[in-house]
Image 1 (cartoon, rainbow, N blue to C red):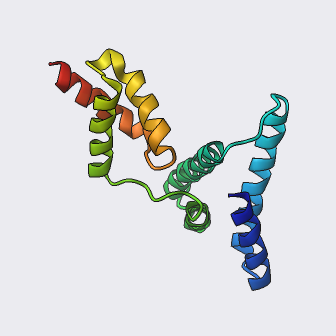
Image 2: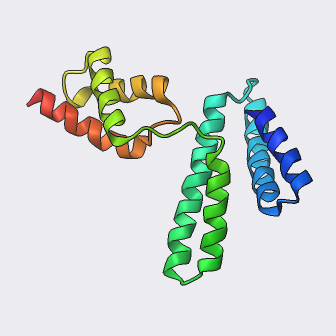
Length: 152
């Protein structure tokens, strides 16, 4: 992942793509901050943590877009959308809603979940298998719904 970032930065610099250079540098700065935090605990930042960082950056930009659109600042919103597109190049392809439901059903079976009280087991199973491919904030509602249906 880090090598990809470095390669993209070099390519963007050679091409004179200022937006891409700035965005990759933002990613690298956030990653450096995470490395400094991890150094205190004596461990390295994993690729899963990098994916979580990138997803957080996308979420922040989506929030900003909503604010900018509400304030009529299309120029700023466009810049945020461009940054999201660049960051998304490093993220795995997100699963479709049908794929998410199938993954949740499999996780329920794999974890032996019997009802809503086992939601944590199911989410842990999903995070282990599909980190970076599922929006867990949205998926948790589906997990709860499917576990309630199973119990009821």
